[in-house]
Structures are given as C-alpha cells and as structure tokens.
Amino acid sequence: MDVSRRDLLIAGSTAGAAGLTGGSAGPALAGSPGPVPAASPAGEAPRVRTGFDRLAAGGYRELAGRRVGVVTNPTGVTPDVRHIVDVMHADPRVDLRAVFGPEHGFRGTAQAGGSEGRYTDPATGLPVYDTYQKSGQALADIFTAAGVDTVVFDIQDVGARFYTYIWTLHDCMVAAGLAGKRVLVLDRPNPVTGRAALGPVLDRAFASFVGREPIAQAHGMTVAELARLFNGEFLTRPVELETVRMSGWARDDFFGTTGLPWVPPSPNMPTPDTALVYAGSCLFEGTNLSEGRGTTRPFELLGAEGIDGRWAAAVNALELPGLHVREAYFAPVFSKFAGRTAGGVHLHVHDRRAFDPVRTGIALLVTAKRLWPGFAWRPDQWIDRLTGSSRVRTLIDAGAGPDDVVRAWRGELAGFRELRRRYLMYR
Image 1: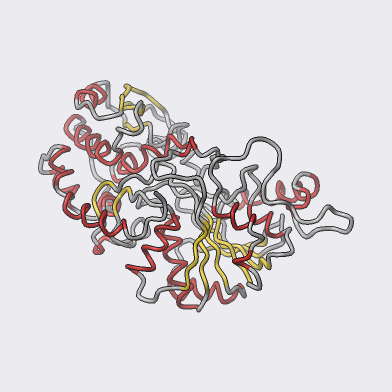
Image 2: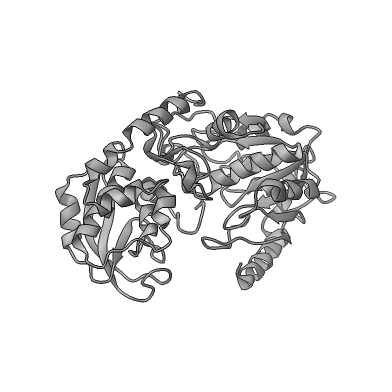
C-alpha cells in the first residue's frame, strides 16, 4: 500500500475523532449522549432498508453474546453515511473485536490490486486485519487470532463475477468453516437489478480471485443470495450461515430508486452508471486498450492511441439495445496511456432496462479488433480469467461476430439461471 496515503488517513481520522465524528469515533465518554442511533431521524427515510439497518433496528439480536469481527469497506454505511463500524463500536450491545479489510482496504485508501495492510484503526482503536489475497487456513488463522466467533460481512457489490468482493465473501465463508466461526451476511442491493443472469459461466479450470466458482458474468444476485448459493452448492464444508435481508427492494430496482447513498465501492467505481456498464466494459482490462482508468469516467470511456471515429460509427451501426456511443478522446492520468491522448468511445446508456452489458462488451471487443490494427490481448491472457474460459477469445480471434459469441454460452447460462432460482430471496 501507499504509506503516505495511510498516514494522511490516520491523521484525518484522528482529527475526525477529536471534533467531527462525535459518539461514533470511539467508546462513549462520561457525560456523552450514549450509543449512536443506527439511522438519522432527519430527512426522508430511504425506501430500501439494508441488512445493517434492519439488524440495528432489531437491537442487534443476531449478535447478542457474540464476539464480532466485521468484513467491510467504505460502502458499509448507514443512510446518513456513518460507517457501521463506528456505529457498532459506540453501541454497548455489540462486542466488536476486529475489522477485516478487503482489496482497496477497510477505509478505502488503496488502488486496484492493493490493500491497507495490518494496522490499528485510529477512529475506534480496533485492530484491522488485511484479508486481500488470503484464503483457506491462512485466513482461518486470522479469524482465530482476532478472537471472534462471528464474522459479519457488509460490502456493496456491483453485480459482476469479476468484482472481487464476492470472492472475499466466498473465501471468508470457507475460512470461517475451517475455524469454526459463524457468518452473518448483511444484504445490500444489486445496483444493476437482480432481474436476470447474463453472460458466460466460469469454467473452474480458469478459477482465480476474479472468479472462484461457476457463476455467470453478470450474476443478477445480491450478496446474501450469493452467500446462500456458495454455501448450498460450492463449499465442501458448509458454514453456519445467517443472512439479514433488506426490506423494500425488488429484483427490478436500479440503485437510483432505493433512496440509499452511493459510496464508491472502489476507486474506479465512482457512480451507479459505472456499475451499469462494468460487467461488459471491464473486459477491456484483458486487452491493450484503456478501460478508462485514470479518467473521471472509468469503464464508460474506452480507447487507445490511433483509434478514431470509425469505432464509434461501427458500434452505433449495430444498434445495440439501450446504448448510444459517442466518439471520444481522453488522456488518462494513470494506468494505460497515462499522459497521452487516446481515441475511442464513450458509452451512454439511454435505456437501462433494454441494455445488456455483456453482449455490449462482446460487440465492443469484436469491432475494436476488426478496426484497429494495434489491437492485442494482454499477454497473460487475462481476458480468459475475466470471461471464465478461453472460448470468447478464441471465437473473436476466429472472426466470430457478437451474436455468434453470445450463442456459444446459452446452454450453460440456462443451467446457471435454473440453479440460481433456488437461492433468490426477493420477488
């Protein structure tokens, strides 16, 4: 991790504990107003209540008498954007012993592929353990060393198989089973709806931290539903699992209808619009084109040096449902083409319900390869990890069109959709 960033975080958190966060910064002081309520009474309440909101409203019954550790990141917030760790730490009804940070860290200071390491959280004094790239017995040993008997998971997902937080959940469940710990998953919305699963299903031969188990590229599930699926289908040693469901959320709800605040789950997921395209445009991580990292519109801007308006014209000619594409030029400040001007496309979704991010991503790959002589897959064949097999890459290399590629996964997707139905919790 970047030490200077964490130093800034610690300094800022210490200042907040002294004058900004009030009762949520640490143990209640003599004469203080006592535990911080779980939600602010000011303003209109969100239509959707998250798993944590319902847990707190019920007086933390599920945590009574438990030694608690929380797996979370900056998205673990109440409707008035206080972090659940700060809220629970200030409440005597919760025996909170530790925090476990995923990729990007508990307080969110690290970029992709990084974490915050092991440290003491200055706002609460709690030990923070790093779970990133830890699994199996090594992660089980961390839970044991932390002295917890219940591992609580509360992180906002974005609905794509290769977004790593769902595999942090999976790995924590495996480790909890090894260590004899209980797992409590607090549910949050799938921001791009839970209407349907889309895209290819992972072949286990290509399993990695961007896909451990055979689920679809856009899984159409919430984290609590995924936990139930993992436990019921994939874990060789099922864990003692409990979930706290949301109220007010339906499967066809996009995030903007929930009334909940959007906190970026990672540095390159700034808005719900990013999440909407991510399940398809993230495939450009597997190429030498920029996926928009280092711009204000990651995963909505795609391109490379030498690409001109012909790419946007070719994509628009396909008349992809729900999508307009604009010719765009951008200069990323980091990542691919940092400090140089790339040409390409800007994705504008005008009909969210008609838009298919995975088919769109395939169409973008096919047209980019046909039009730009400089197109190349990443030499480590990362595209195979992202799509879950070598099939998408080999079909595109053989000249297949978007519809040919999509047809190739129909059978396996139908099988996953049937399996998925058994674990859905919402209408």
